[in-house]
Figure 1 (tube, rainbow, N blue to C red):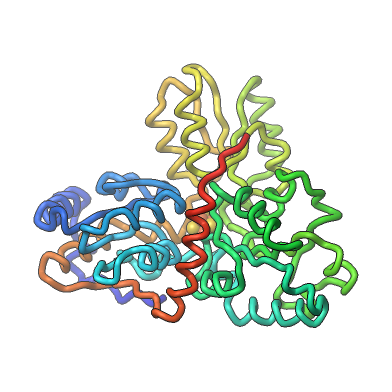
Figure 2 (tube, rainbow, N blue to C red; figure 1 turned 90 degrees about the vertical axis):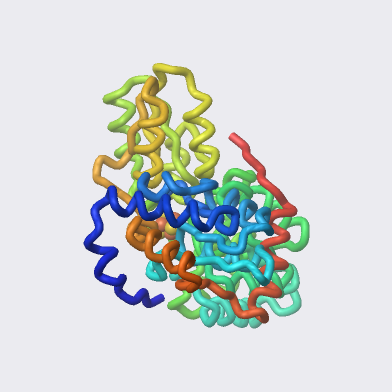
Length: 370
Ligand code: SF4
């Protein structure tokens, strides 16, 4: 989405002045305001978050503050959309920078998913009824609407195993989008074979680049999408960390490729990663395969443990990073003045089915498994 340039004053303020003005605006807005901060946000933003969490936790947090008039979501676009869907109609969800999207979410759109569904119908005939669509929460609201309308669910990295098990109780196949890695890792975690039971659907090829036979046989149709941050982690990095730090624990996110997850000691969602390091013995060492702002924060919060990022190159999520304190300051000061800027509103016809899918996700709940 297009973000208009900030008024010049906000780009000229020092870090200290911005922090002071954000504090002042927050104090004036009081209980009318809740600020949610995703774990991948920079520290200067997390410092102002009333609640921090991963997308699953923040989706729940967003829906549990009906008293707040304004929910400022320091995260990316799809998260603010989910918050809008899960909150009351008189609550306003605000994304400080409209350019904060998610490159993975952009890898699947409604036109492509509808085309995939139509092609699957041509191949599977009546058996299409047994295909349950599951979208990762990192997707546009209209894709959540699609899965809601087609008896599917949303999942997060926290509850993906539970969501996929639920889908397989409703039908015989899962169409999983947009992250092929989370889909594959979840299938393998549930005991399926990556080669035999999964295939990749390339939206730019007829039949997704597959044969009719494979489409009929496979249990999981995985969309060809990925996270540009988590795709950077490699088995070579794990081998290097093990060599340099004998006894180190390797902890990665399931958006990483399967071979990386299999070479690690532990894999799980952002909340899982945090809990694992928080519950670790002092003196233990952890090489973590996830976004750098979170890894650096863990290292700071647990100085008696060695915590570092598996990737020696800096790898922030560039879209999360677009929420700079200057944008937060601007939206809060506009609210103080009575003007709502960067309001995220999902059209009611999309929100209706997306809410069904998000509610299913929340009902399935979190399944945290080693
Ligand atoms: S870390 Fe990856 S999946 Fe998460 S918001 Fe950034 S690009 Fe999207």
